[in-house]
Amino acid sequence: MQSDAYLKCIDPQCGLEYPVKSTNVECEKGHLLDIKYKNKPSDNLKEVFYQRRNPQGNIFNESGVWRFRELLNFCQIDTENIGECSKYLVSLDGAEGRQSKPYKMSKAAEFIGISSDTLWLQPEGYNPSGSFKDNGMASAVTHAKMVGAKKIVCASTGNTSASAGMFAANEGINCDVYIPSGQIAPGKLSQAYQFGAQIVEVDGNFDDALKQSLYDAKHHNGYTVNSVNPFRIEGQKTIVHRALEYLKWESPDWIVYPGGALGNTSSCGKALMELYEWGWIKKIPRIAVINSEGASTLSDLYNGKFEGEELRWNDGNPNTELIEKYYEYLDKNKIRPKTKATAIQIGRPANILKGLRALEFTDGVVTTVSDSEMLDGMSVVGLNGFDCEMASGASVVGIKKLLEEGTIKKDDVVLGILTGRQKDAMLAVEYHNNPKNKFAIPPKN
Ligand code: F0G
Image (tube, rainbow, N blue to C red; front, top):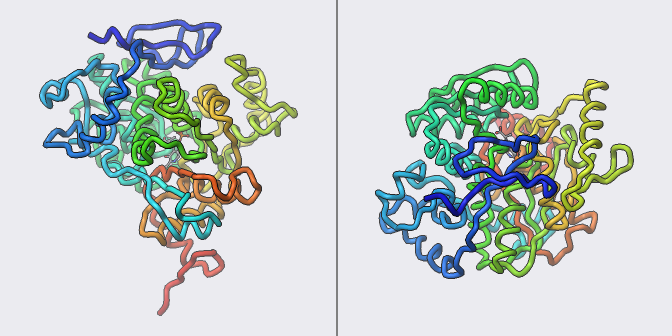
C-alpha cells in the first residue's frame, strides 16, 4: 500500500523526500513539497475517465475530482468498487467538481473582443461550497483521514474556510478557521459558522491569519488544509484535467487564473508538467496570472517593478532574497494588500515558488487589473447567466487586457477559470445602482 507516492522537496538542490503519510507542509529546510508518483499512468485512462462520465451509481465517478483518481492516486486505489473507494476517498457525495467544465459565454467574449469560438470560461463556483476550493479540499481531507487527523485547520479569505467547514461537517471532524477580522465576504463567513467551524478572528490580514494558523496547527495537533499542503494541490489539478478532457486533450493557448496565494497557479503548473511528461498533451498552454492592483506582489516581482529584477524560478535557483526584501519593503512602508476583491487580498503568496516554477514551465505572464475592471468582469459573466464573484472577474478582464496589449493573440484559444460564486450580494446591488458602471442596469420605480 501507498508505496508509489511520496513527498519531495521542490528545491532541486535539496530534494528531501518523505513518506506519503507525512503531514509536513515543508521540508526541514523550509521548502514547499510536491507529491510524486513512481509510476506513469496508462494512456488507456483517457477512455476510462470518459466512460466514468456515466457514473453508474458510483459517486467517485460522479465526482469531478475522483473521476480522475488515478492521476492523484496517493491512496493507491485500484478498484471500481464503491465500498472499497469510500474507505479512503473523501467526497461530498460525488458533488465536488461535478458541474465544472468549460463553457462558451458570448457576451463575455464580445466584451473581451475575442471570438466566442476561442474563449472558454470554466465556472468553479458551482461546487457544493461555492468555489474551486472543494477540488483540493476533497484530496486534502482524504489525506487527513489517511493519517487519522481529528481536526483540520486553515486560514482563509473566506472560500477555503467555507469548503473546509463543509468537508469537516461531512466527515464529523473538527475545523478551526482563522480569518482576517472584518475582511471577508459576509456570505463566506456565514458558511463557516453554518457548518459548525470554530472561527478564530485574527486582528490583521490574511497573511497574519495564515502565519498564526500554521503555528497553532503545528503546536496543537491540527491538520493544515491551506494550499501549502501539497495534497490540496493534487485535487486542484483536476480543474485542468476536466477542462482538457472536455477539449479532447487539445491544449488551449492560455489558461488564466486570478492570483492570490497561488495554489491555483501551482496546481495548474503541476498538472501540465505531468500531462506533458506522460505525453498526454503535445502543447504546453501558457499560464496568465491576474493580480489585483492593490495586492500585486507576484506581478511586481515577476515584472521587475521592484529593484529592477524580474524574479524567476531560474531552474530552481530563484532569488528568494529579493522576495524577502520586497516583504521588508512592504512592512517598512506599511503597505497592506487592499482590494474590494477580498478573496485575493493577499500580500505574501505562500506558494510563490511553486507559482514561479509553473510560470517558467509554461512561459507564463502576470498582470494586474483594477477593482472597477474586476467588477465589470464579474458583471458581464452574470449577463451570460453565470454567477461569479469579484475575484473571478479578474480572469475575464485579465484576458481583455492581455489581448489589447497584444500578449494574447486574436486567434489564441483561451481558457479562463471563474474561481467562485458570488457571496457578497451587495457588490452586485451597488454595481447596478450606479448608472456609470459599464453593465449597470439600475432599478426603476
Ligand atoms: N478566487 C477566489 C474566489 C478565491 O477564493 C481565491 C483564494 C483565489 C481566487 C485565489 O486563488 O490562492 O489559489 O491564488 N482564496 C483563498 C481563501 C485564499 O482563503 O479562500 P489562489
